[in-house]
Image (cartoon, rainbow, N blue to C red; front, top):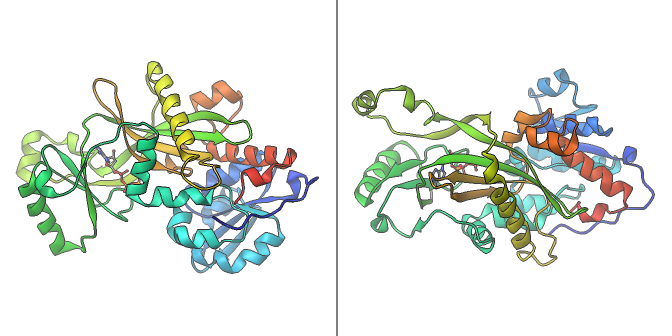
Length: 352
Ligand code: ATP
């Protein structure tokens, strides 16, 4: 947990700046911050500034050699009253340990990060939430149905493969070892159904959970294999892979919504039992699920942060339309929460 900082009363949100590193969902985060009236800072790697200039979402662009060099800018950012908004690339650049040491005010609960980063701790969190999870097999010999083999540290499902028994697992892992360094993996039950990613936002100010939107992923090559006849798939000896290339919008069958709210609320409640201060998870997070033909949700992962699937809804989603009646992206929702916390003098509830 980062050192607690104190925030003076009587500040206007205009005194603060919203900053993030230029990748992942930064366009949405910075645009949303500007919609709420904040000044914005994009920290970009050299040569990657163009989108942030061109789309005019950053009042200031700071160029660094590598994202990690943001550490060297800390004093300057603290001086400017910048608030850092984390996202996927942010976590990749810093790692959970270095994030704990950041001195710039950070939107979110750093204490929760280790519960997301470690697959077994994450499983414990989801189990405490009472969600249904795919089975995990301790060793290949125990495999008694389809499994997805997931490598630790794989980015966006790269290199994952399917197996139906120990023999198939050993054959495929051997083929891969020849090509790449095979790291530790988990053997997870493969759930056949419709993958749906749920985008939530939890406000610690109002203690309310919001369902912002949904997406499904567009992955290479798994999403194109259906375009090839089954016979050709076999003749070509195709293997599936799950490398993410984009996101596709989804609205869910309306009768699924009560369960979707229930799952999100259970995750928030359980998160308050995870770390010492009981703050739990707040801000944006996502449950990655597969819905089976009998309409049961299996949750295979939680992302304790804004996910890139929310980029679909820069201008709001059908669900945020119902609640806000104005364009409300997840990025803008973050800025609105920060603004409300400043106005209520409750910044310490949402910054770490
Ligand atoms: P990220 O961290 O970016 O979410 P990842 O590398 O952890 O990605 P996953 O999201 O776990 O990868 O999985 C990649 C793909 O595999 C997704 O399309 C997902 O739908 C599918 N998948 C993952 N686990 C299962 C499962 N247990 N059953 C069925 N499909 C799964």
